[in-house]
Amino acid sequence: MKRIALIAHDNMKPALIEWCEHNKTILAQHDLCGTGTTAAKISEKTGLLVKGYSSGPLGGDQQIGAKVAEGAIDIIIFFSDPLTAQPHDPDVKALLRIAQVYDIPIANNRATADCIVKSGLLA
Image (cartoon, rainbow, N blue to C red; front, side):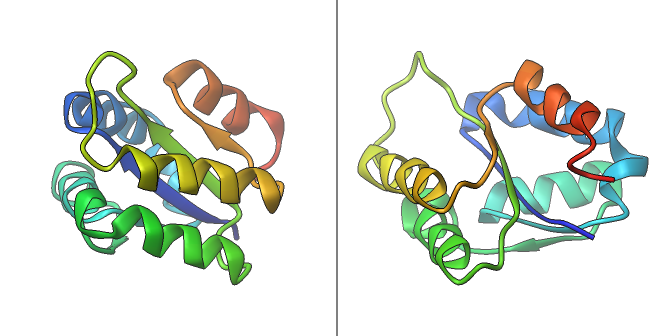
């Protein structure tokens, strides 16, 4: 079982929820967590059990980054919005940096998330 963090900026939440619904059978076999609103919406719309941390702007990205540093996250699926400025951009950059430092696969869009699912990492 892998520990997967699910995160999405506001404009990307519908796309992540759709991706989770499409991959529901696979995701249901893993331990899922996410930032506050994203986790709640995924759980509500898909029925998947997703442990919620704080909202991204309120420290959720940093909480997930701390879990990466503790060795408690194996994969991050983060549908980010490259066209909208984010008030918590430094937190997002810190999460991306910590994922790189700890060699954690991170998908920033559906194509990359699909590659992770098809790669065998979730087997």
